Image (cartoon, rainbow, N blue to C red; front, side, top):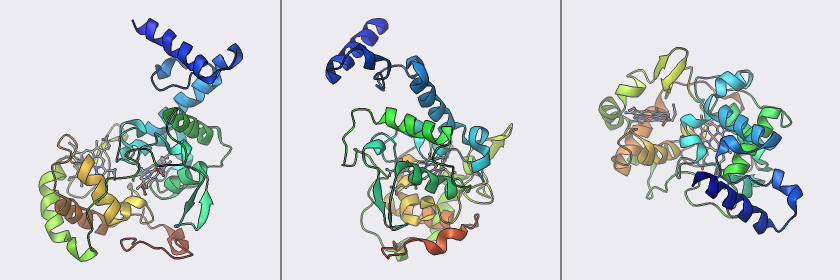
Length: 272
Ligand code: HEC
Ligand code: HEC
């Protein structure tokens, strides 16, 4: 049955693209196919990209300055809606970024996360690992729309809120009940055999102050639909905002380049 489905999808693929046998070796970039069976150098790049996303420090340690993996935030290998999924990103970049006030390629955007979310440094755009990450995202984006946001892009949309609504004291009380078991009272997460089973939310091994997750709005939206792990979507938006206020107030690595963000204005109210 599996074999039959595989043959049918390959056949459909070839039919779809209306091209000759030559392209068959490069076209099976179809997420319905088993990732382990994508042939050739393209398959190798896609698989390397997936491994980089989950074992980031191990495979790209020279560009990583904390204990996180890409998939600490881009959940389920970058496929979960409202956890800033990568399905569809290949079709929306290059895209204007108000934060840098320039049109960014997907590679530039990935480097934004290397420098901030991973507290590391930008990877050269021609590094095989940078190409592998984009190959994986391209594979996830197969047949997704181009030029418009895929469903679930970014994070869930919260109802309108003001910074004054978010209360870090209430947030701490909630954190101590809902989050502490995995992320720890000191936010340092739980490490076993050199890797984090539960990633750090603050402190030297977490994302830095220039990261998107360091903004209350982003953190609250992420937390609302994706945490506590195993009981997702059980917090109210107000609770998620309070917890995010507490988490984003905690000490974390400084991002020196932050002073150059939003050079042409448009700085969001919750940017630290
Ligand atoms: C601490 C959490 C965190 C980690 C770790 C992280 N990111 Fe991100 N990433 C974010 C946030 C927050 C955004 C911005 C989402 C938004 O504004 O909608 C983002 C956005 C992105 C985007 C653009 C998505 C879009 O729809 O425009 C890409 C691509 C991306 N990250 C790749 C990576 C890669 C590759 C890594 C690992 C090298 C990584 N990220 C690590 C939090 C993280
Ligand atoms: C049962 C364990 C568990 C609980 C409880 C839990 N988390 Fe997580 N959290 C995780 C894991 C594991 C990840 C990494 C992503 C994954 O594997 O799903 C994560 C990732 C995160 C991240 C992004 C990565 C990082 O380190 O910054 C944030 C932010 C976060 N959790 C916040 C919270 C908050 C706030 C709560 C309480 C409301 C909470 N979590 C409760 C297990 C947990």
